[in-house]
Each structure stands twice: as structure tokens, then as C-alpha cells.
Length: 91
Image 1 (cartoon, rainbow, N blue to C red):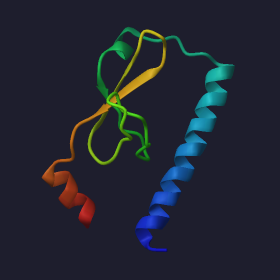
Image 2: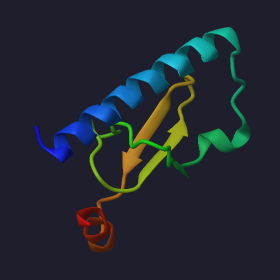
Image 3: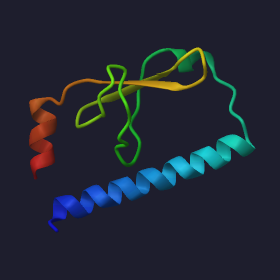
Image 4: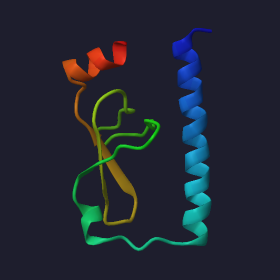
């Protein structure tokens, strides 16, 4: 198991922990959506989550954007990874 695989496993564990805590906290303390939630905004969490994008694919590398839909769920889209982002990730 290489370092990339270990990092991927750590990211997935952190994602599941984050989702679980958000679900519990959201159930206990419901959040009222603000007016800015309905416009696309950059989503930059500590660990890059794997989410389903608006075109049905899973997210990969690149800038992740999100907005709240009218039904209260989040909608995601992603810009392609730039050459600069790719080269920073290599080192």
C-alpha cells in the first residue's frame, strides 16, 4: 500500500466522520438557509470530499463549487484542474 493509497483512505475516513457529525448536528440544530446559500460559492473544506456533481459524475481534483437547491439539498459543480494545481499536487 503506497502513500497515495494511505492518503486516500485517510481522506475518506475524515469525510465519513465529517458527514456523520454534520448529520447529527444538523438534526439537533437545524440550519436556516441564508440568501447567499442559493448562489454558487467556492467550497474549500479541510479535506476534499467526494461528492456527486450536477452532471452525475463523482468529484475529482479541481475547484469545487456549491449552492443550495430549493429543496434544501446542496448541488455541486467542479472546475477542471489547472496545470498550476496539478503541478502543486505533484510535489
